[in-house]
Amino acid sequence: MSNRRVFLQQSAALSIPLIVSPRVFGADAPSRRINVGFIGTGNQGMGLLKRFIARDLGNVLAVCDVNEGSFGYKKPDHFYGREPAMKMVNAAAAKKTKGGTSNLCKSYSDFRDVLKRDDIDALIIVVPDHWHRIISVMALEASKDVYCEKPLTFSVSDGRKMIEAVRKNNRVFQTGSQERSNPVSQFVCEAVKAGKIGQVKKIVTKVGFNNKVSPKPGWKPMPAPQTFDYRTWLGPAPDSPYHKDRCLYRFRFHYDYSGGQITNFGAHCNDMAHWGMAMDHGGPTEIECEGAGFLPEGSLFNTATETRFRCKYENGVELFCESGSEMVQTRFEGTDGWMVTGYRGTYASNRELLDGCPTKPTGVDDPHSAHMANFIDCVKSREETRAPVETGHASAVLCHIANAMIRLYPETGPGHVAKWDALAETFINNDAANKMLVREERDPWS
Ligand SMILES: NC(=O)c1ccc[n+]([C@@H]2O[C@H](COP(=O)([O-])OP(=O)(O)OC[C@H]3O[C@@H](n4cnc5c(N)ncnc54)[C@H](O)[C@@H]3O)[C@@H](O)[C@H]2O)c1
Image 1 (cartoon, rainbow, N blue to C red):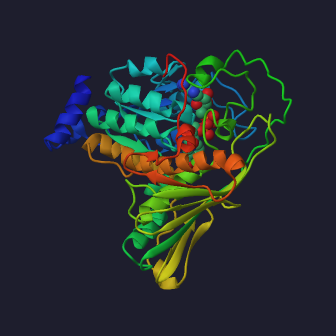
Image 2 (cartoon, protein in one colour):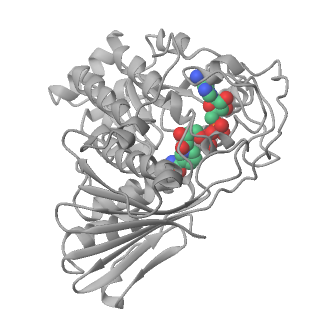
């Protein structure tokens, strides 16, 4: 570990004030600024990178992506990848120098080269879900602190391995569940937790429908662009022919890399559900899929296009999660009222419940920026972040077991209630459901 990082950590542990003299260790002194690398500079990675720069949270020394640079992301005008990312970082740094140039940030195509750098304290990992655990665990083992996007994991067992790696290596970890840094979500979830709507009885969460159209059955493979390392993009996932709609942004609609909107938006709304009922480290005791629709066999996308599942917790709360036009929404119903929060707004059964509710900040204070700022603060103080690894794991587990039931639905139909042992993290006497939790990984990544 670099001397610089040892110094930062020891100072925090011994509570030695880092600000010895404003000139030597002032707020902007190099010793107080955290050096980071971004792994994955696509749709969300570029968004986070822009915010990181705008809020001046630290030095971005490295950006890494298997894509050199291209269109083809979420929106047609997005040109993303490692080269545009590096240019953006260096252009922002150049503005601060007298000479007007900077090459502080280097670009990488292999994340392992970033891990080798001793001068990098922390990584912001923004790659598709099938890579989250692998890159995070390798980074934690290399003594980096980690911010990893939601859904934290690709499988239930991933989460256990990530928790072990965080705790064994004594690292700071933030799950990219930025609602935890949204003052509106904080207000609602903390109010519900404090009993403001009485005893919670029911929670209804909403996830959006697929927002991209799948290539239809009979789609034809394409040659991968030379500027895109498709083999590494696939990594541990099954070997499959390239198609442009398999990878950038759209990977979330294929079970080989993600879990559809149940893990995409579900990681937010179900995380808030856990938060409001003080279930950050727990899970349900039973779960059932009540309906699921899929595209015709042979379509490129294979995740459920619309669905509804129900589960029950030990405290008696029933949670229903369903597809809807709201992308992310959580509705808490209690014995004395209800509260709703989500991307479309915040409401309550009576106005007093929202007295003192803040408005959602924008710009450099928006939840994404605030969430990264919380991570960087914790990297310096060595305190626990707002969304520690255990919390991200528990929310992801709910989404994964829901997807297991959803994927079985075409065979089982309605009424297949599975019992879940939240402590052992396994379905009870249900081999078919347990089988759905296993993700095969190709060497050398397994
Ligand atoms: N917190 C949020 O609100 C939020 C919003 C959007 C996305 N996300 C999450 O961010 C992650 C990325 O989603 P996205 O929409 O940005 O996808 P994306 O496809 O737009 O970007 C992912 C990037 O990672 C790169 N990549 C893939 N494998 C890599 C590897 N092994 N090494 C280096 N780079 C690699 C891809 O080339 C791509 O540029 C997902 O887990 C997603 O759920 C979170």
